[in-house]
Amino acid sequence: MQLAIKVITYLQDADYEDNVIDILRGSFGDDLLIQTRALTVNDVVSSLKRIITNEDRWILIHDFQSFPAEINRELTRLSNLIAISLVEFRFQSPSELQKFVARSLRSFDSEKVIRKKAMFRPELLVVTGTTGAPGITTVTLNLGYELSREQNVNILDANYFRKDIAFLMGGKRGKSQTKLDKRLTIATEIEDLDDSGLITVAVLGSVANLGVAFSDRRAPSRNYVDLLESAGKILFLMQPENNHMFELEMFLEMIENQALSAKPYFLMNKLGNSRRERSIYKRFQARIGGHPSNFLPFDFESLDRAKSGYCAIAEVAPRGRLRKSLLQLAQQIQPNVQ
Image 1 (cartoon, rainbow, N blue to C red):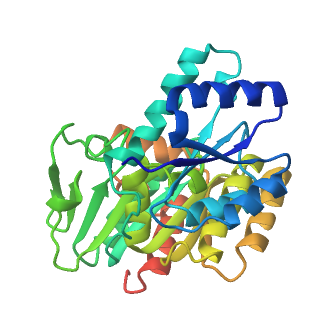
Image 2 (tube, rainbow, N blue to C red):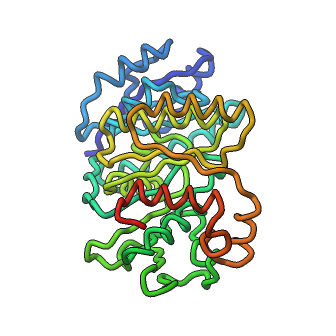
Image 3 (cartoon, rainbow, N blue to C red):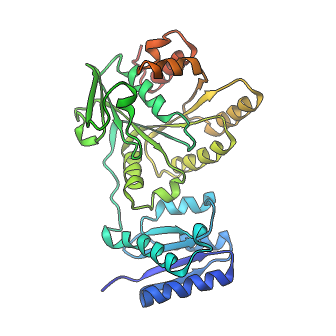
């Protein structure tokens, strides 16, 4: 017998909420149980707090543009809940809404609801960060290069949508493994890596909403979360932008709520000398608190020369400010680097 799906709704328009409920009941009948029709954010939070992580299946149907922090905290805990946003379906036909919700609900039937936590890898350093191209790929490449000066290093290109680190270093696209030199290897699958305790630097790319990612069963989010949970260390990047501070806050909540066990490092990338950027950097440092943090100066000339030469910044500007900052970052993460 198919398990019932329990539903929490939070939609600002009451008439639209009635229509959505009627459409869903028409599609799923008695398998769909409306548990709460929330009127406020506090109603949503209270409903989520009452949910127990078990075999029961839950969905939150909402029209949030982005989740408040208190809801994100609960979503990280609830692996048996899917959040479905109807923001983009406000003016679409009932049939389109039915199809969209049905696709989202299939994930409950296609795989086990309770997801096992990924295996912990103390030698794994994951590099992620905010949306808006904060420089995750470039920093990963150059950090891997700096670390490989003292020991063998694997770079895992785990960015689901790109996988182009080998290409940026002059290699061919599509190869599962590229040997750059005797100490530095780039792979696209974790199974292809040497599993003998070598340092692995994994580039993940960014994710817009970490809270949703922890309850998302689609492959990109699932792989992203598995690597975050596996990591012994996580490097989180952002640029001196106000909207990046909001995404930093979301990531810090994951750390503070112990959703992630890795040691976090924080990096402000492409920091200039304007008053606005320095002000944001002060806020960044204040919010990070006692966690290790650093910054990289904005050096367009060195970046451009490295990209043109398909090489690391250390090879084109070994005495530049940016290279020195990258070396300091490497030494902060791995003290034996010289």
